[in-house]
Length: 223
Image (cartoon, rainbow, N blue to C red):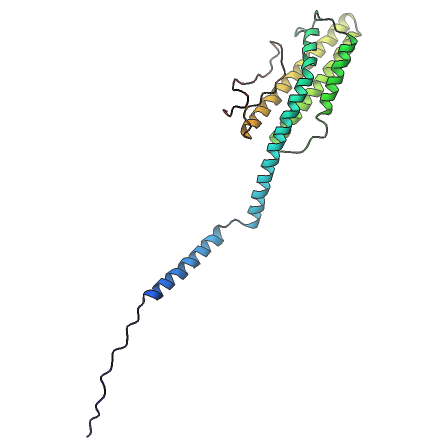
């Protein structure tokens, strides 16, 4: 029998598994990363909500600044009114020593009316800002009513005059208290908005019970 000599079989080459492992790892990492991104990325609704909140915060900060400027202008307009009423009507409700003319009363009325008009057609804002604005407006209207009551009392005599003056004093006290509450709230709003303390308080007489500004300097960011 013939014997056929065959060439010895060469062993099959061993292929490196490293590239395949690296590729598998990269694919796995990409897939896992994609899943994490997909499950944690903000939804379109959340993105819209975040944008609305940011725009609302910016709008509110602008409104706080505008309201503070209006409060300062109004305070400066009303100071002659409150000081005149304080001289004419001390806290106890009796007629003061100051001589008040019809021209004085008319001047107070014009100033109070202008202050009331300044708060007409208010913009809509955040709740805290709306409350501060509404309280300021309420205080201004109450002070305008005080002037009207005092003007009416001037035409009266005896007990009727005393009763009307007492009512005017209580109206003035309520107006100044409401303003002090609003000024306190406005101060806090400015601190939270990054504007620092803003003290827009009306001067008051001792014993009237209004809130007073804190001792922090104007513009200070200390709470």
